[in-house]
Length: 302
Image 1 (cartoon, helix red, strand yellow):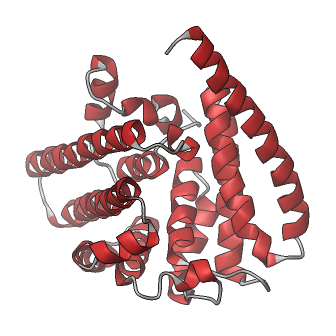
Image 2: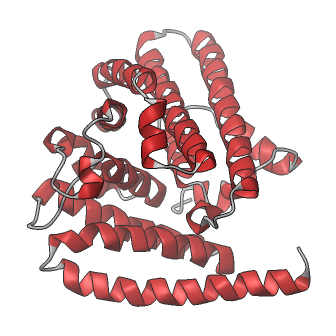
Image 3: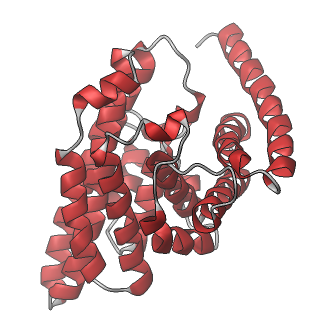
């Protein structure tokens, strides 16, 4: 990147960040009485956090914005204020936010409220009526969250069935109808499959932790699961790089791969070895890992 193009990019990011800050102020005020503004508020938090990180690399600010997004969506799903129109993609986003921001209250609220999920009347929400894969993913994700909260393997076992179904029922035609641009559709399909695969690894780790006796056996199984987790992340980040390099549209939300950040943090919480992640960053030989900054993966309390 030339100095001139870098300057143009930074100028775009700063103007965009200032815009998101202004919009957030409006959404915050309005969402107190209008539930329809909770989702725009959360999505503005997502965009603002991406611009903040791109410009300033401030992990605390990014987490604060993700936390705000998590609380806004968790409020919508738990309280169902007038105007809030739930859809599975927003529930999944809410869990990503809550985990990446370490917002335990929102995380717990979402894990316990997923059975209330329904498709509302908006065009965006109705689009998911014919996508069983999204509802399966919501169910599996919430069950993994519940397994961690309750420290029980039964929800994790149920999660594996839901997540396997979420992968099997992912309809390529549905994605292509929702995202007419072929590159965009291909990326969305890949990301859905990757999220399912990573959650499956976390669920299996939880199950094995309760089933396997003996440290040696558990270590071998953990190393195997971590290796599979790392392989999925490698491949997905490579596909993400290819998507952003070849698509004509700009995707500022993808400055950071939020699902990857959230699921790496979730895997850490489940006790899955994550030394491979440090190795990827130290080697700097794997494409795409700048989208999973270690500063945003470290527990802010440590």
